[in-house]
View 1 (cartoon, rainbow, N blue to C red):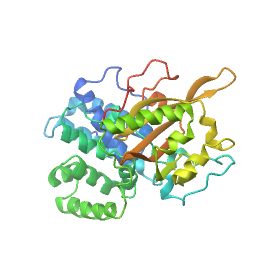
View 2 (cartoon, rainbow, N blue to C red):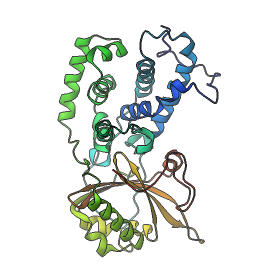
View 3 (cartoon, one colour):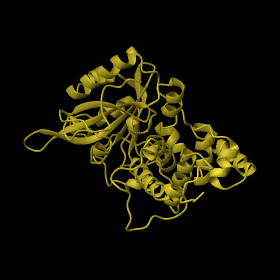
View 4 (tube, helix red, strand yellow):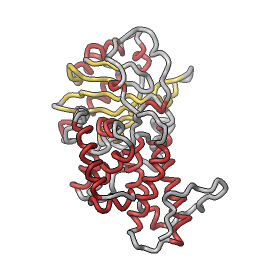
Length: 348
């Protein structure tokens, strides 16, 4: 079998506009795999595009001794391992600093975008299969806390854990993909499990999206868009957490979160916002649009990923990166057309 998995792409070559459908049918699962490996929606898209180009170039020499799917995973793994060389670990704000106070001044200087685990729209990574068990596993494995914990693993351990525990590959299949032994894979998995066991990956494990939680989210949208602090108090858990990448400041506690949004505080700039629901990281999410400029038109501002538990909102992850809107297929304005990634009411 001609193995293009480890060969760099030529700078002046590119795949044609329409890739082989046999390659394209693996794009979504490879995007999910790359996202877990890299912790970045943008880098995952880049990794998969590079994987597709390498696979397209090598397809004529593919002799079928392995499945096309496993061959493409081999390519994607090598692309991700190359991208991770020399990189710092991506994290969430609570991994880096202690909780802060709802200060009146601005947020300060943002950290580099590469410091943070980024969100990912469910529509780009969850399987289209109707198998509830498969969807549940995929949803659990793209949660922000889980993806952030994965970043603590050395890259090859990370690949082993994802292949064995998330994708249910055998030790022999994983060893073949990584050009190593079964004993080495089992050892790497044992070390990866120990590291993951030392991390709390339950912080954002959501409750099922039942009718009560859908009603809770509807009340949240109404309260946030009206900027009704009294109504929000009744929806937020007392020990709720709010993070705001790319800024290091994060807060714990309903009182501090509400104070952050009070008049004269930085969060007051969200007054008059509109929220468009979709799903990200296996959880309910909203694209937030703030009124901007003298004309008051609503412009993209942030991606909110919410964690709902016991009929309360216990976590707010506000990603202040408007570049995520086109990546996720979200419209430029709340009443605009929706792109290919889609947006809609959370369905769970």
